[in-house]
Length: 436
Image (cartoon, rainbow, N blue to C red; front, side):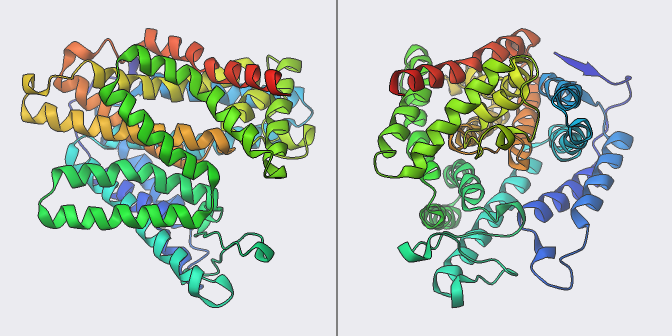
């Protein structure tokens, strides 16, 4: 299941977590980018480096789990794929970026979040960041020329149609990325609502209302579909049986493709998205082992895939998609299995109940990513690895409390997940063949 570093006395580095908190706030709230005098500061890199060094030096035990190994496996694959597709040094650069901006953050979050209290701190930072984004977006709706209060942020869209889609700082300068993050925060606000006192409940209801308002302001159809799908999946997980949930999981990509196809009759840009999906699958069929190379999708087609799953499959082929999709599906699968195997909460003590509630919350946040990622090319967005790392940390804590569940977080399930992830690609391909 995991490789453990040389045995040492268990230690929990407060120093490493402190800098992980600073890193999280810098990445999500991005305060240094709010002012012209500090916009060039490299605080994110500094905090990440210090947190990483402190974790390696003081956090024990340190383990690499299946998701770490899957993503590490992408590094040589990206390099080889780059050389085979005539962009070798670009492949090396893409692999370097993956290691620094994806694998290291994933390792930090999965290693340093060793308690529920630490998890709560990071969840609250996520909610605060989301509220900053929504307030800045609201300012963009009323401000001069669509500018918000955050430095140089402004709404985007077709001005002739009256569109004013909100944006934020850094990689949230795209309304779709911003919307994805807002969707992933919905389970967090509901978690604190159910756990809190009267004041907390009122605060979280206000936050939830703000998230809904922000999602509307993004103008992202994929995000709005994500909210509806998230509610549907919540009902399936909590009320329906496993068989119905599995059937829905298989049929969901088909349904999403059909909905997108119906929308194409109204919006020509949607039709172009379907063509991009089909082009990505053709890239996979033509280059099944190494794909067309990371970053080369638009070299083969005029636009990005607008689908993270197809984008990865087209660029990195069968092995690459199996590793990336396997890490994603395995994380969600473990969370789901924990939920359905612990449906009698009265059997567990308070600590286990609290951890199970956190697992459920993080599971639905990951589902929020998986849904919105179906309509966006965000395969290596930092959001994925932050939330995946938090989810893995919850799984690790649960296994310590409930060792009888350790078989869920196993190498066997990880390998199966590398096969399960192909349901998405096959379902989309069948739907496109039937419709095109």
